[in-house]
Image (cartoon, rainbow, N blue to C red):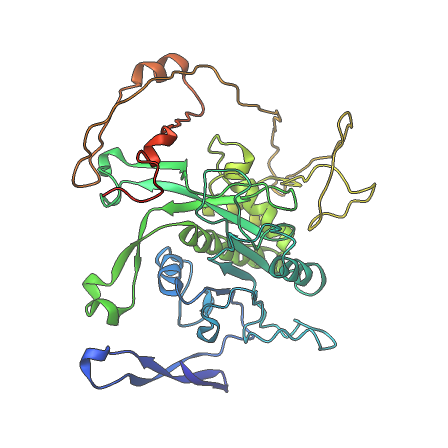
Length: 427
């Protein structure tokens, strides 16, 4: 998009359409106009251009956004920063105006910001420059902006979550939705499996010691829209997408709905803390521990009901246990509990509805009830790469023990990785 200008409620620009090198005619420049929504009730959401179209497609495809005007979400991406991973944007025109007397108070600030990327090489995640900058903005200048970021796809190990994270940021992991495609495995609609944590979804804790992920959304897998000039026809303008780079925009779409519902009910925008509490309270517990699933799978219907004041909720929705040398410096700082220490926190149940409610609280610890070990010798794999090489029916075990969580671990002998012991790939 070239030379965008806004005047009298209308913005205009030239939209560049890449016709492909084979056409020999170069790009086409088409006039493009849209309403100037900088002062209206819209919620901004930024995406990295590499994933921009697929991410935006998931948001729009679920009915959360429109490119053409209020009151839905306006999606923004800054093509000039493609490949630049060390800046978190919060303002609609991307000007970090911290030098102003009242920074980030012009009315066009982003309400929800998606970051479908992560820095896996960052060891001190949560302490890094990007994370601290986002936390600084939330705590000092942008209390009504919610930053969401993907945990990354390097699981299942713990402590694998990527930067930016920690403190005020809401990290998003990947849950499953198998059955919409047979690309990855032979699972059809009649075997549709939904609501597990995808094994490669990164886990917490973060370098700050807090819970990651905070929430999960589907990241395995789904179809998304692709640029029309890539497919050359609308019927084929889609592709299979996945990863936490898919999960994060899906959860961002739910967050946009929360902001809309909250504003309609209360006449103001929620803070990042209120939005986080709403999303966490409304999530479905998938049965995993908090460092794998956070609060669980996001639920837009539940979340908007809480935001509208039609359902009860509890605060705080997350607790970073302990303090630092007697001072409560969270969020955005470590909290420590020493052996033998006892700590407590009051929990408040809010019921904004006229009907009475009854709540029951309990702590739950998963315990191992059964374990089996067996050795499998596999022959040559199938050529399609999809058909299983080994299947074992465990229906009787499931019926007998009725587990809340089933975990399967495959151990390969280390020698199988390099049987020749020459550090080269076998052909």
